[in-house]
Length: 169
Image (cartoon, rainbow, N blue to C red; front, side):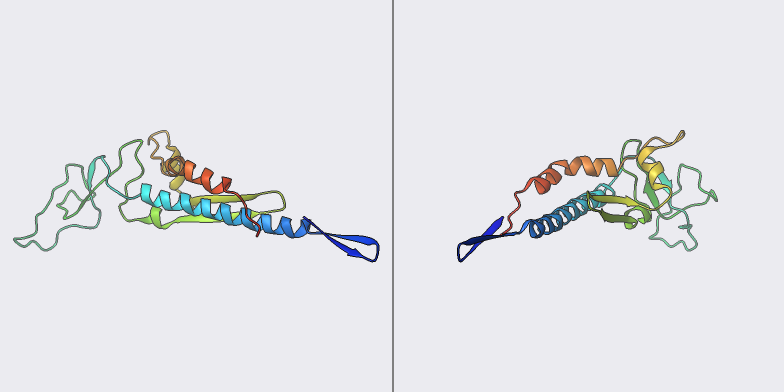
């Protein structure tokens, strides 16, 4: 964009390229932030809901008081103490997103934006040490992908956000 100003036989041009670069950089950062939040929201959805894995006794829910209305559930899986438990939870099957027992993985999901002169990069993830083992698996545990599934579920929405026309008006 150039603005032409005419003064007594001379034409003066002012460049607005710097302004456009700043506006474009701010718009790119805003859109990457939107994409990161879309993926984070989808990750939280993927990490919630029921699973189809084995049932386990919830640690720390040992029955101390038994009244007629409480039903004591004895877990088929061996618990730490081998005693009756009031609560049970269902784990995730291999290939499913990790089951939520206490919600630590869901609560640890964070976003980060890094911007420099050449690129704006967005990150979604967890700083919990076991999150990478859940996502990628180990020798003994098959993967329970949650981030890659969330990204795959939002790919179309991310494309739509990044491909919208920029309006500088």
